Image (cartoon, rainbow, N blue to C red; front, side, top):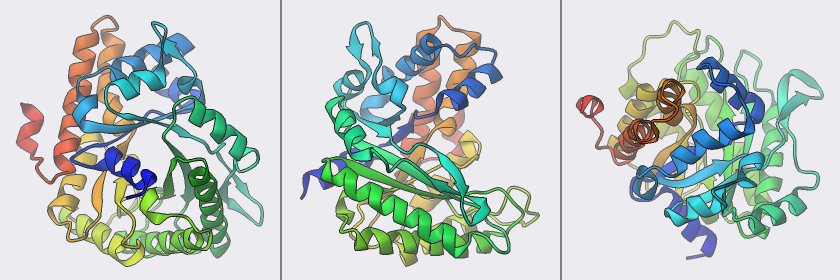
Length: 335
């Protein structure tokens, strides 16, 4: 077992998943202001530190994706990556610099951040990061995602992954096919399969060790403006079908993004996927809003009730940990 494979498995095994706390300052500002909290550096750190010190971190959260601001911060003179490591989780870092307009296809995006990446990675590794994240985004319509978008983003994800592994960290590969639109679940299945297959073509071309990555894809869903009626069971089956047909067997596991689903929706679908998982892949979660939103809402109304905020976060993390093992039920939500 390689060291990268060992770290990847520690992040996603035994019902553990990933807390995506890598919101940019702009995104975190929107989330804080939506619950009436001003977005200062202190407030962003205070909320995140409450989560990082919650009891669920030990058994439910194998990795935390941080933003550049957060990985450099300390709380009570203890560095944030150290707080995360001390509780038994792995600190990670978002390293792309965002999705920009794709030249040649102006409705689509290409993720940037390869320039200077090697030097930034060396610094992040010295700050305690054990894994990294890079997100490519794709839109669905009759003509999108274009071949240009699929090839360009796959190439960027592969170059990123190769450099990350060279720096002894695990790359999370996140090709997100957005749920915006009126497309059907079958459209999403077809396009997502095409996107993931091309990503692995490029990863293999770039000599990336597939046993030392984590794939972070979208689940198969109809567009958010679609009128299609389809059960969560069918969506779980389509998601498994997609991954069986596109992901090489060497990959240790898959950590789904929530992609705008509500907290309970994201948990329920993950549970159904695991109940029907007939692959060798670990299938778990890498959720941001779907892990944090209720805790953020509670904290905004009760800023001094740290244990109350942690109780809300612990519950959500525990529900997703159960779902990652196919053991969740709706009755558990109300206990």
